[in-house]
Image (cartoon, rainbow, N blue to C red; front, top):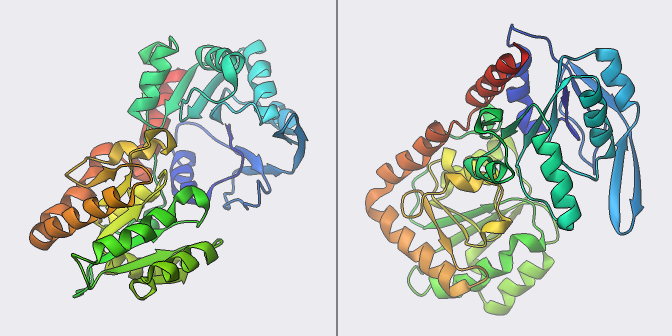
Length: 358
């Protein structure tokens, strides 16, 4: 049995492949809704609602009937999303599984958390007391080894989106304008103000620059900043885009710029052959940052520094002017190298579970 906060849409293909493995049956326990997110549909899902409350400035979640559903399913093994003390039902199910000798496996970023030294010790105990951990990245593996976990109890499985979300076979449109792209939810954490502040510097060298910003959220501060700097003609605020519309904009772009901490957007951009420029504030990134090879498929810039960002963008504009084909190939090849596809991730998960169930 798998336990997730919600069945994420981007992991639909991965779960479908796991559930069709032919070696063991599966189900997934999750919320009918979690923080405003509705689940993807899977036949093997067991859904219930959350009891949510706040205490000491923290927001806690308890999935109704979670333990009853686990007992009713009678699993030989439980695979749960990473340790999160705000998801109270997962801690209860972990303790129940340990008491009854049921193998409990975390599927996790394997971070140290932000709960202070008591939380750190508790997190360390939960990982070390489990039957194993499916880690998103090599960095997660190294952290778990520091916790004292045996290498045989950890496997790096990577991450992936649904196959339809990759742009591996998309042909890029010809354009006389050098085009940079941002795609994601527009929030202060994404630091789009840094990108906007970099544009007046970039246009001194690339007068025809075009910047596409895709995503919903509060864009007014960014729009106002662009007007104040006199660069609004270089920026197109396109709002949310999905499916073929999103694909069309990725096909127009030469470079993907994400000024804040990046996650699966890294894999998404690389699949289109787009080099990625992002902040060097490493603690802000998701595990997918392991895909970035500076100078090969993108680069880091100095966090919150528009001059550093503009310098990185202009350098890559020059590179792409002469080596576009080889750079796009290098971007796409990175995904295969790290196994960031549903087929690869599901295969590693299934193999690990078969080993643990023997």
